[in-house]
Figure 1 (spheres, rainbow over the protein chains, first blue to last red):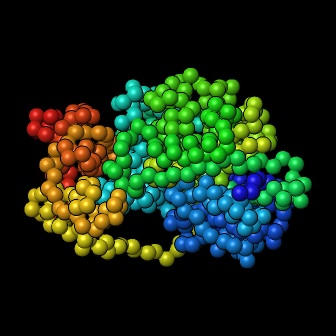
Figure 2: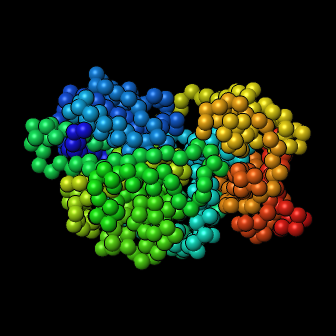
Figure 3: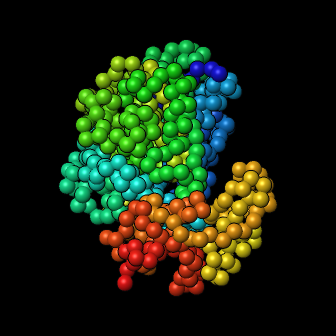
Length: 388
Length: 151
């Protein structure tokens, strides 16, 4: 296995992007990523496109996006792992380089979710659990899936709706500092608690918005890093992956996500570090409850004590381990295929100490960062550990 | 959400409906009409499946026996779905629950005939076949007698 580095990153504005189509939106991330790496489209040997794509007009978006970005001719594939699509695309490109097949690869995560109305988007996402057994007769939605976890978690450990609200308040606090975030305003606990119920106990402000957005990275082998004289490569030090059942009722319990536990243990092992060495992280907070589960699944907190971390401010900048200080899915937005790639872009910039404004830059001790990307309700999980 | 006024082309519309094969689990759908909740049990390794399956993913046997479940179980978790998907637009808000049945399998279904305030994790529920108003047959949870039944 060869070492693989991130040498270029790009990120569009997330939000309601009716000003661009899917291809134009992808271009907004690919152009700065290639420029950052100092390479041209012709140099890229392999491209993975992370995109779900049912909510916009191109049914098979990879080839359309690659053509528009001048990447025609490269090895090309669309990667799908539900909401972990972006990280799965990064993993595919990583293995292409680590294996020695290629020296330079690009990952493009892109999603246009707002070309359909909200209730159709809710339907299309809801169908992505276990269609026959959970949607056909029972109309599950993704807020509903995570609500089942929230109800079980609060009942088991005594966490409250106020604890969930604190996650949203933190996300918006940092989203307000991120010019690329979908939602850029601070909110109060009261705003969260008084927002309308989407799927009890989860409310509107417990939920990520439906967003358009793109993110891209360029990956290179160690030889290529030297050849291109990259001054701050960020190395992929560990990767981990796992999956869970499609049908929710086949799961053992609803107070943690097993795929996250397994994937993180694999990634920690590969990187040779434990959770105590992580300086800063992005975790999959599609709903507020998901962030609390992640604290525990990733070993940041003991089982049943994740909500105490948010109460104590341990995941803010200045706390023990800053989490989602770009606003997270909750405030930055969750354009599904782009999300995992966006997490890697954010953590690459954190490790390069390039975050602007500086109030959003996490202090670095070990120069190690982690991203945690869950697909579905733990149907998939991908973890990536980065090291400068 | 306010849609902006930027120019767009409305694409051709598409009506999508899939024909989902149920030949291998037809006994289950017939059972519902007879008032039974059926599961499959692997003849080789004994694993019990609800929802039922035709092939055992644990030991790769395709010899499955149909077994009737009591339907009785305890509530594990639940949610009230307020914001509904497009195709459930005309439904009243519904409660979805997961319960663990006596036989050790779990099920996910609507929880009906109960007031929201009376729902408690751990309460006794029964999974029963249910014909919906559009004629389709599935199954729902109702509270066991004396456990918060909505009069």
